[in-house]
Length: 294
Image 1: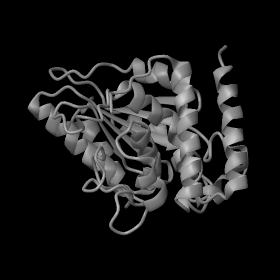
Image 2 (image 1 turned 90 degrees about the horizontal axis):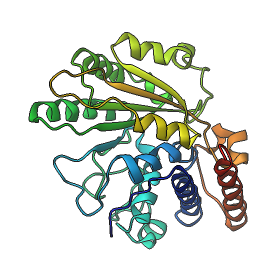
Image 3 (image 1 turned 60 degrees about the horizontal axis):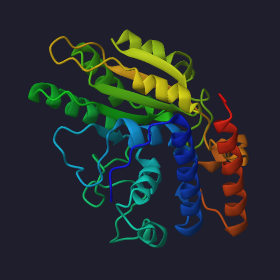
Image 4 (image 1 turned 135 degrees about the horizontal axis):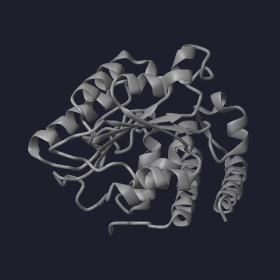
């Protein structure tokens, strides 16, 4: 179980494709899983775990580690697939015992059961608050690592997020990076149908609370790599602004039939035929991505 580091963008693209297929296999062998959101977040989370976090599966409690908090906890299957891919857990544990009482992998991640999970999440609107607490504690301890937090766009309706955003901005917590997976769809409605201001002016809202905002194509691994690789350094003496990355994606990213009816694929399972179709579509999508800036 060695530390994995992928430097090149094409290698990260290929790995994201592998993780997407692992998510699809989970939807076949483990039963119904949250599938659309993990597909849309796969690119940026792959870039973090295989390059920018410096994640060490043998030392997940290093006090000076970079941390990743999955605030949209229903996307836990994405992290489980990454952990299994890194050799932290056998695939059989995921495929055979997912969401079964007394076993490791629940539908929402539990820190007590899964090594590598920083915070038990599932109830939305809490991960960013934890992240702000971690960031402030690191500042007090003189630790210059980063706290990355992945949120869903629908989750941004939770008022607790905006309390954390206000606090981080007013305290110049430049060691926190909030990533919004802006896939334009929640569990039951398309983006904009419930709170129209949110998707039209989210970046401006973050800026008004003192955050630096980057809006990127979250399906473009080159854009992801350029953004994560060029963030301003954490400065313990003269801290700058906390950082928000709005990652524009589509729910079910990489699987055309899911992207066309994204609201219908918040959660679902696949039979053998659908799995074969899905894996083939992911292969085609990955090849298209590899040619994107060829």
